[in-house]
Image 1 (cartoon, rainbow, N blue to C red):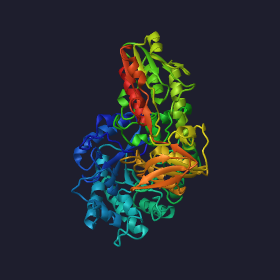
Image 2: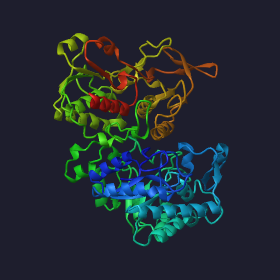
Image 3: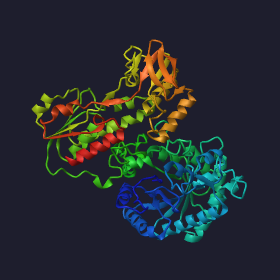
Image 4: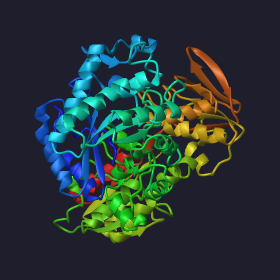
Amino acid sequence: MPAMGTTLASPDGQVTSRMIDYYVERAKGGVGLIVTQFSCISPDSGPPRSLCIYDDKFISGLRELAAAVHEHGAKIAVQTCHLGMIMEQVGHPKDEKIAVPSMLPWMEEKGCFKEASSSDIDRYVEYFAEATRRAKDAGFDAVEFHACHGCLLSSFLSPALNRRSDEYGGSTENRTRFSCRILARSRQKVGPDFPLIFRINGDDDYEEGDQSDDTAHQAVLLEEAGADAISVSAGMEFWSPLSLPCYMYPAGVNVPLAEAVKKAVRVPVVAAGKIDPVLGEHILEKGKADFIALGRPLLADPHLPNKAREDKLEDIRRCIYCNNCLVASKRRFRSCTVNPFLFRESEYPPKPAPVKKKVVVIGGGLAGMQAAAILGQRGHDVSLYEREGELGGQWRVAFTLKAKQSYATFVDHLSKNLSQAKVKVFTGTEVTKEFISKLKPVAVVLATGAVPLALNVLGAGQKNVVQANDVIMGQVEVGRRVVVLGGRFLGMEMAIDLAEQGKEVSLVSRSRISGKKRPIERHTYKALMRRLIELRVPLYPNCSVIEITGKGVYVEHNEGAFLLEADTVVLAVGTKSQNGLATELKGTVPEIYQIGDCIEPEDAATATYEAARVALQI
């Protein structure tokens, strides 16, 4: 299990019981080696609620974590880190400058960076070495140094960011010198037998960044300096989606980078990036890497290794790489679409209900299926009603998109859970107030979802105006010239899909592309935007639609009106909740609950999170 960021540490960086539960569950699930989330080697190296290791006061909590993981048979390593320029994205003290190898023009404009001096480098070498000593004192089995994705060490390794002319810049040897000094000094602190792992970018995914030959040379230098293993990732977080490849990328996207490093070094190499157990086994058999790191798949299913070991691959709850786990929403803590108990491990498995109740769940989308399955697992008498002829709701639209076909695995998983929990499922059934009155349930869970919004402009009702969902499901024909209205993820995905079919597509958004304030999730946003640019799709942000005609769309921008010619106009402007039944049922059922999009449209992780929360309280 590679390092993945959480916000489970206390405000002052200590280990918490919730963090211990999170790692212990993966240890129980059969993980061989757990690498913790990054831990700050100095007070200025990470945002609040980061795990910290810069003082001896953190050792006791770290020791408790290591002992808890060891109790269940796994090894555990601390990842040490200074986030460097990534701090600008995640938050840093306003009165402190962020150390970088070189001041580039765009950094000077931001005003929050400073070029690291020789004394800064000496200080950070000692910080990393002392952190390594503390990890050993706390009973950890290894230390991994975070040197990828644009953190401090990564930026020194990268020719795109390191433009220094002193002994720490220029040649590959010079750019690697800072990291080699850290390895050598850490080795002095912990002796010859304590494993030290170095995690680097196989490729910065930037024109002037590390490429495979340079990375392989760096790996050799790191091995000579004392690294016992090299872990290979990719991408600078400022501009690349490869550090956390989403559903748009192929399986094993970064494996060739690990293979290139393995050919250059004698120490073990770790591969990561969209790998499942079958692919992982193939990578090992072909000698492309020595260890397989599974990140998000272990968030989706902590017991994946044991299920793979027992040849129960069909029981694995598959990661769909939606990246919802990377962000919270106003209605949920960080969670996983397919695992609503992520970061709430103490609540799983669900406890039996103290009183068995007759419960009706209305709506067979993700929220309704998830709630019904958990209610059934807890011993309730559960019936699930869906108006359409099959389960899945709007999720069926999502996995009809070519890039999201893997999303179908979650409906399959939930369907199996419903069967195992003995939930009675009725499809093609319209539920009304009278229907519920005859059933006489104790509790009703409403998961009636949302429907696509129309656009309140002149001409929006014309035949050349269609909904994105209908396009995706093949229910309408689309002409050669298309204007997609709506700049959030669905609009971006729709524009990409149509452009890949050879259509002439334009994308219009009334605010910025990706959302009014910020991208829903920046790694997926970068992948979508990169593809739009590759396909040369014209983008029209901050444009209001004035009118739709048979010729196309009139938009307003900077007090001027312009016609975007189109045969078809596709709406991807959001959804509205379907919650009328909630009002009708008031006073007719003792307990009424609402979950998912029928409260307010949100992401799929919010739907399953709320489903689990409500199912646990009935």
